[in-house]
Amino acid sequence: MSTQTMTRRVGPYALLVPSLVILAIAMGYPLVRQVVMSFQEYGRAQQFGQPAPFVGLDNYVDLFTDAQMWAVVGRSLAFCAVNVAVTMLLGIAIALLLRRVSRGPRLTLQIAMLLAWAMPVIAAMTSWQWLFDTRYGVINWTLVKLGFESFDGHNWLTNPWSFYFVATVIVVWMSVPFVMFTVYAALTQVSEDALEAGELDGASPWQRFRHIVYPTIRPVLTITLLLQVVWDLRVFAQIYYLQGVGGTPSKTHLLGTYIYTLGIGQSDYGMASALAMFVLVLTLVLTAGYVRALLRESR
Amino acid sequence: MSRTLSRRLWGALAIVIAVVWVFPVYWILNSAFQPADRLRSPEPAWFPRDLTGSGFARVFDDAFLDSFKLSITVTLLAVVCAGLCAFLGAVAISRFRFRGRVQFILVVLAIQMIPPEALFISQYKMLGDAGLYNTVGGLGLLYVAMILPFTIWMLRGFADGVPIDLEEAAMVDGCSRTRAFFTITFPLLAPGLVAASVYGFLQAWNEFTLAVVVMDPSNRTLPLWLRGLSDVSNEAIDWPGVMAGATMVAVPVIVFFMIVQGRMTSGLVSGAVKG
Image 1 (cartoon, each protein chain N blue to C red):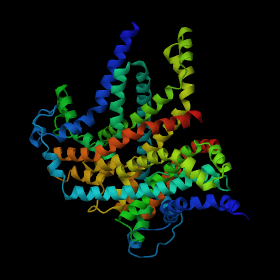
Image 2: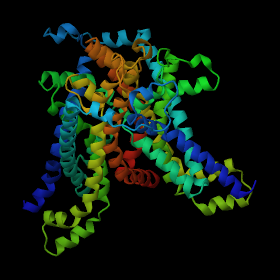
Image 3: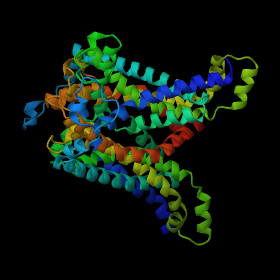
Image 4: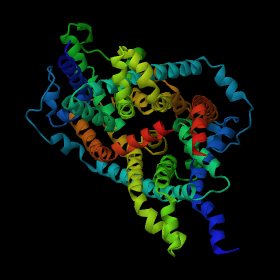
């Protein structure tokens, strides 16, 4: 066999080794271990060296018969649905608006969005915490000036509903720029001629959107929607942060923070692993169709 | 309604939205440079007056420097390792047709769909057992794995964009395959490598969840340091200091981000629209 053929045969595999080794150590092994752990009793005692007995589906049974876990799942799905819907609608609306305005306002809005997008999550959280501050927050001050006296000294984070409201405001604020820029870029692909022809033929703005704009930007909307669903379902940093600065953790857990509390807080690694497996399956179910479609293209 | 008038009204709406969106960013800067007592007055301090840098001076201490060093070390480690591995991997899937290629692409794609929150429990246990809990190496390893799949994906796109005919022409002229690759394709790949590295840098620099999980509270990356400043258990929060801290964490990110964002969006969109 010539050297040339050897390179062709072995070369690609040698090139893949470093990536495969790292992914196997940092993700493959933990994944396998987590599957195993989810069928074990793995608590504080095991942490200190006791053997971890296999308990079959016990962790899953406990989890699925636990009302609090379903409350967390329900809240996470609802939080995800609301945040994705608001983000997508605002993002699309602002992208459409961007096409109707002249250069000055367009640049101003784009720069504002870019700054919000580039803000590191924790720096943004810090700013919002200060805006919603009980005593010195601008939001309470403004509401009082507008005549809502009851907001004087109002604490936004103690009540779960207003806790989620604050979290939603922050998540939407941070996610809209990505949707807006992506949709705006996609809108540049829409044929101007077709739009003008539609307008001459008397099509309403909605009809023009539905029959000319929408079909062109549909692939971009699909991928954006999917990414938003994945991101908002697993929101951790924002919830963890808000819980740390005044929220009531037991009443405001979403899936991410609940796994953290079960595992690292209460050392119940078996249950935490079972819940993590559930989140993984949920995400894969939600994204399977998209991954299949992408794969078909890359063949 | 005339066309100009409607354009003006839409323009006004766009400016209003811009002001709302930029306000939290403005508020960080505005608060960072004010003295603390002015921020605690009943009337909000809308504009910077009595400018002072004392907030910056208060938070720029050893704790900040330690966190900064930790963040920069772990981020660079992750970016360099991920960049090297991804470069080799991208070359393999873009330049060779081999058994298992499609499966590898499938794995890379599927990994990006795994939420980090679904793995951190066993990653935490693994690092603990390996004696890597609370170490740069342990956190770095998780960060490499976190940014690697997207980096491979991005570089593969760049490599596919360089026609293989160019390399083959060089080989006809007598270059070896490797030499042809490094003289023809590699220079064209460099911008992709830069863009992917900056993207990885942003990811690792801002990462919060894994840092909370595998680092000890005494040994914090910058996002955790910043979070520590505004903890409520800390009775009198030094707001100008906290805002100065937020500014110091955000500025490098914003600068880097401005450089790469155009490429990120256009790459994503061209991929999605063409698909």
